[in-house]
Figure 1 (spheres, rainbow, N blue to C red):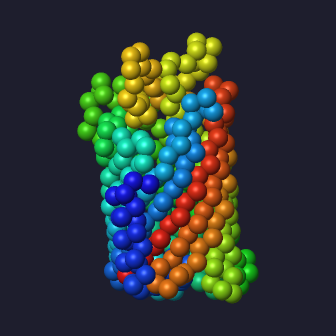
Figure 2 (figure 1 turned 45 degrees about the horizontal axis):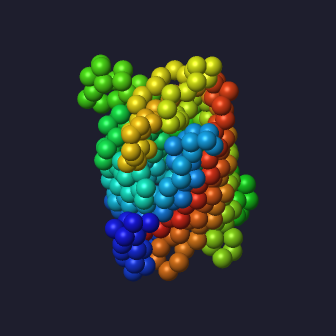
Length: 305
C-alpha cells in the first residue's frame, strides 16, 4: 500500500476509535440527521476482469464521508436520504484512482403493521465517477433495488431482492460515447442473503448474487478473430505501464453473460468503530465462451455520528 493511502486509512481508524458507536448492525436510524466516515482496504486478484493470461492484481484503499436525513413515519415506514463523497487510491494502476459523488434514497416499510418479522425496502442510488487518468470510464451508475427482508430467528435475518444497474455517460459527445462504448454497461441481479448476530455482538453474513448483463474485460492486444464475439471495444490505457517499443495496447471489451458471486464476512464492534472483514469470489461466463474469475478481500472500518 502506498504511504499516502496508508496514512489516510490509519488516520480514519484512529479517529473512529474515539467516536460514537456505529449502528451498522444496530436498529434502523430514528428521525434526524446522521453522518458516516468509512475506510476500506481491498486486495483484488483480477482487477482487469479478464482471463488468466492477462489478469493483474492490485491493492485499493477507499475512504468516504457522507450522511443524510432519516424520517420515520409511525412504526411501519422510514425514509432515508443520503449523500456521500468517496475517493479510491490504487497501489499499481493509479489511472483508476477516482472520486465519486453518490446520492441515494431508501424507503423501508411494512405492509402489515401487526407483522414485526418482515419488511420491504426500496433503494434508488446515482453515483458519478471522475477518474484520475481514465476518461473512457467516466460516467454515472444508476441503481434501483427492491428487497424483502424477514426475521428468521431472534438472531438471524434473511433477504431476497432484485437489482438493476445502468452505467450512463454524462457530458460526452456522440463521438466520445461511440469511442467509449465498452463502458456503457447494464445488468440485472437477483440476490439472497442471511445475517446472524452472535451473543458477542459479532454479525456473520453470507450473500449469493446471480447477475445477467454486460461483462467488461480488459485484454492486452486485439483478441483473435475467432473470439471476437463482443458488443463493443474501447482502447483502455489504464493498465498500460512504461515499456520500450513495441508496446502492446490494451482494449476493454464488453459482452453479455452471466455472473455468479458469493460473499462471506463478519462484522464486529471494537470500542467505537465497527469492523467488517469480507471475502468474495465470482465467476463470469460471457457469450464469447470465455470465463473470468475474481477473488477479492476487504477490511472496512465504519464510524457513525
